[in-house]
Image (cartoon, helix red, strand yellow):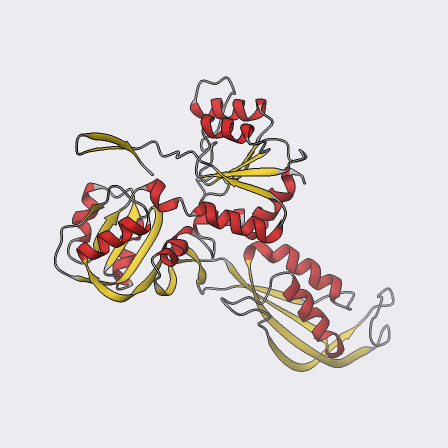
Length: 373
């Protein structure tokens, strides 16, 4: 297998178009044509992790956080990123990162956190906007099923837990072909009127080119009429954060103990205790302070995330119980997501989890200095 096989697959199922404008997801370094037999999964690319990948004969290192986040003007080893890239190239190890595009993916880390807490009625907290299109095309009645199936095979017609979704209306179409036309139906130079089916279906923006390609290949007409409409509705199955409900309400201390145990957290920064019951919970892996007001509007009693600032706790006031469990701790389950995605496609490919805890943050308490994890 080649590096590009894994990268192309990940690019297709976790679209790079979903990433934030400041991000740099995708293949960071290495030869796309290089042959590999195994890959290492890690939250971060560090020199130590690259060394681990080399020792385990992993030709590809797949991480969440990009090693190249800011533009590099040289590769001399003067920065940490340059040192990591140089070491990876020396060891013939490619590096691929799936960052903010994975944060908003349908099976994102926030959803995984919700599953770990056994929340029910899970849904996206802040759905993606401007990522859906409606495709409308007109097909001869006898070819409607063929074209529909082609659209579905390319990923159109998926709405949440349902696929092969479409609307179909029967009518008739007219056309007149010139003498140079290659008519499928009717005669050149004469007006044709025939039964057609109007097919409507939804697709994500990133699949547009592939969906159009297969539609044109399956459609019998020389000139295919179709329309694409941007949809104002949110993509409720992709976006940042999630919100769900505990099976039974708990008090704040019980909730703190619950998340400490679930996420294997040593230190939690949290709001003042008010005696409230926690039932509806919002979560966001990584830095989620921007979602505090959205969590409040969603009716959440508590919000679990990371990288909260001093004034974030003031701003939440008594409207929301905040718990900061740490960036590394909130995102570590991403590796399970990546593993499941890759194994589903490449069943016999060797995937390994890094044994190195890459969090740069250490904690001092009870007279002891301890690292995270």
